[in-house]
Image (cartoon, rainbow, N blue to C red; front, side, top):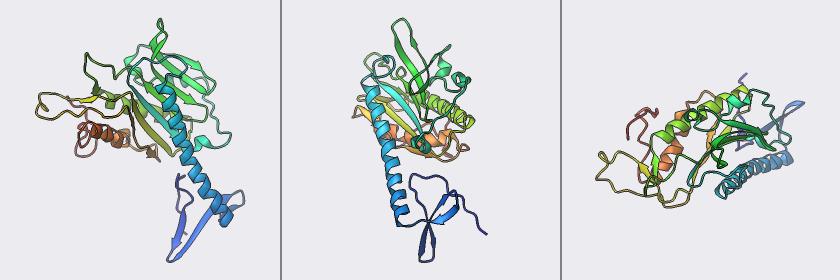
Length: 278
């Protein structure tokens, strides 16, 4: 007997091919069965619907953040947005109980740069945040929806320095790696099912350049980002054992591409992230 485990997939249903014969199988309370035409039609439709729901959710949230339609006013300027979206989040009735310890499990993005943070329950889930209380402005927040979707926003790190719009080439990658590592650890703790999609977006980013050491790159032409939003292609996570720096590398490479570089310069030949002075 051969047992093959097929992970939950956005491209389901999966086919079993033996020579020139193709069979689709499903599982229900009675066990494994071969899918009929109506079953196949429904399975393909659900797969397309899931992809659409993920895309629409992300689009709606980016729009809300861009127009500052959030629970509290965000700091003005460019923002980094990280979404972690499990496939299972859109299942009817899906809801997680985060208990009493969630405050330390889902801190704001870049939490270690803060002496503390605030928290609140929202209509949609749970939230931690930090900012300027006197002005009522939020710099960072992490919002975990009841269905398991996580949204983390940094509205501080991409501040304009004088007249220069600079992406901190080392700092933002390092802190995203650390934050995602923390969030995945918490996902596993609360048994939030994989696979999930990592979606990284930069908004209000037009005119920014990658911050690198001008001594080493003084002869290189500078290419400012030519659009207001960088919506990076989603990255799929199927295991909690994957190194987070490798998960995020394609997203980082895309941002460096937008600034005229072939790839992120913070990885070694083994595609391992290394802190370097840029």
